Length: 382
Image (cartoon, rainbow, N blue to C red; front, top):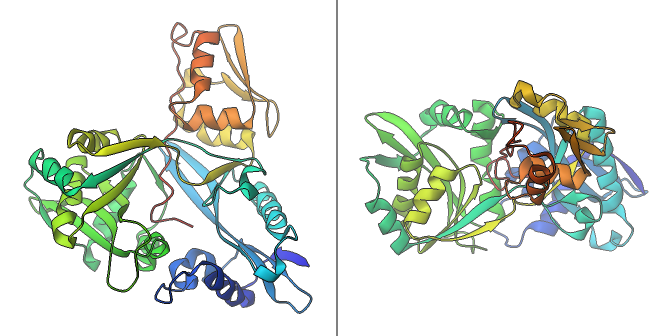
């Protein structure tokens, strides 16, 4: 079996294999349509396993992204559309593909790989659950309560093509977001990747106030073509928190919803507060999928612009995969890869308590804030 970087002429085979494995209903759009960043012609970062006749028998999609989080720019990859022909399973092909993707990311100078799955293939290979998010389940009663608490007034309508720059501008103002152009946004909206995966129809609502577009919400709703695999789901949002909450409440009447799942990264506190005040059921969870630390030293270099000057030298990497030392006030705490990811991205990390107790961070005037990340089941889902 030959494992190698995909070439343009082989991507159609990868689409056929992905369609065979992942499409649950004949009405679902092809994976090639839903995931243009993986399958469209261009420079491919994905890897495949080929048999002696040159047929693709296993595939792993790998896509580069830059994530802006406050002042820092993270060089990352995302892995998705991972599949193996049933006749070729049990040969360790997916593990070999994952090793190739890790090496590719290392050579590229990436710090992180986000993986859409969380099965043992990944967790055995040092891919870890990460971050923190809150999931809300809004009912029709919650939506009524929510709308009654909002000021407004807002004018709500579906997005039109001439809104593209306004919507893109709202995304650029988010605390943490995937870096993309208006053209990228245009393609991703047309692809409807995550909505297609969960067999929902994608809708984009915008809210205007005094003639200005102040918020948008991308929502997957039950349609007439596919049988949904989950209730209506918020895919992406940006803008004023109250206007976004109004859009969520308005979606119930507009699309006849009975329930709406809203998953928010931990930093979306204002919108979370509005949903909780409306009485929505909520549970704390990790961000979606798993995360692999490609290179700890590189990650610390990439987050440096968002750290204050007094943080210089406090968090150090002795190797590309640690150990990592948090040093302050003559005391230090040692972390491994898992500990570093927990400390940096999870506001509920137990390592925060350990470090605070060991180094007395409050007395020394510096506490490392958790770094916000986008929720990964969004518009850039791979």
